[in-house]
Amino acid sequence: MKEKLTYLQPYAISLLRIVAGYMIMFHGLDKVFGLFGGKVPLASLMGIGGLIELLAGLLIMIGLGTRLASFILSGQMAVAYVMFHGLAGNIFLPSVNKGELAALYAFVFLLFVFTGSGVLGLDNFLSKNKSL
Image 1 (cartoon, rainbow, N blue to C red):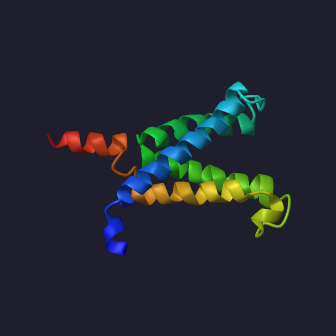
Image 2: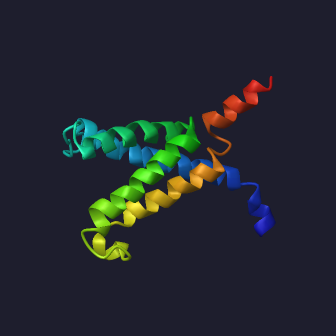
């Protein structure tokens, strides 16, 4: 069974990248433009975080500059976990401090630092075209 599914791994990574980028991009859209009632001042820590989520999320979603954008977002989510969740409760229990999403995002984006965009990313497409 393992051998039968291995060829789908790059597509699974691409799908996870697209969905994670899409979801974090909407966190940024909400903070920057208040699409869902969550607008924050852009000159604040949350506002800067929203801009990073919006721009890096878009880049990750389309698979352009995936490793760098993922590195930045992974770090941002780790800091968000510690600052807004870990220090507010028990740092080792995300279900208690409500930091599951930030912790999960931190590790998902860290995965993309090492895997890249997968086969369906612009990074992959552009690197193939350079050899032509």
